[in-house]
Length: 315
Image (cartoon, rainbow, N blue to C red):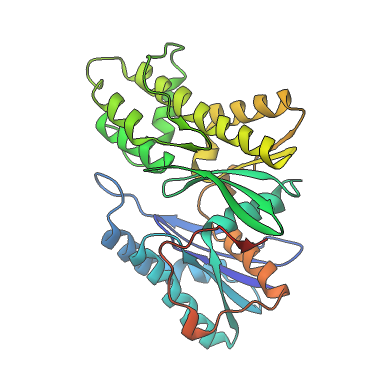
């Protein structure tokens, strides 16, 4: 069975064709704002302008269904992908499959690693969650109480004068020093909070070296998420950890997860970086699993779900 996946959740418009044996294409184009963070209307316009080109490159061979990001995400961006998916489904006379973006990150992680039933630390610009499997359902064990980690990174980077996305700049700066400021530790039981640490460090910009601010942010915020992941693994008796989402490309975060797993005699899994960031192969992969179960989406049920949580979704 061959599936075309379409991703349009936030800054990336992407298309990918896969089947059980191969990822044939993985095409994407990212919206980059001239200043500030993501502007929803501008991002949606970018997706609209790039959709035909990216889909033409991403569509390979005869397809059996079209999977698309139905949520969660930025409504204007989700709408662009949903409209493209509906149009193509009618053109090719194939069925639609609405996919949860968060779950798709886990599914591509399983496909591209040896993870079977991992506890997942999913960190991106729009979501930050610890997700486990229970009774054949995905369950959110812990999550951010305010803003997502990737959003916090970008906010701090903008205050420091660096462009979006800010993650690569923060990582590069943090490598320049081992010095860390004493500030609030952002873990609260199984959950974490990033608005406080971000505001606290924003007030230090211009007064403290950028490298120290960046390293402080990474060490405190990343440690908090890994601590929550470890607690979740203990609670679920898990010996597999999967790190995914755009923030998962950070080398220091990967090192922390690997060290924690080694201490627990557990296995850490990291998808290739191209599949950590938003991509359409993950949407197609989740669509493929749903297609095998004949879980298709009627046209009348294909409206976007901007706040669609991964909780209680069948594995």
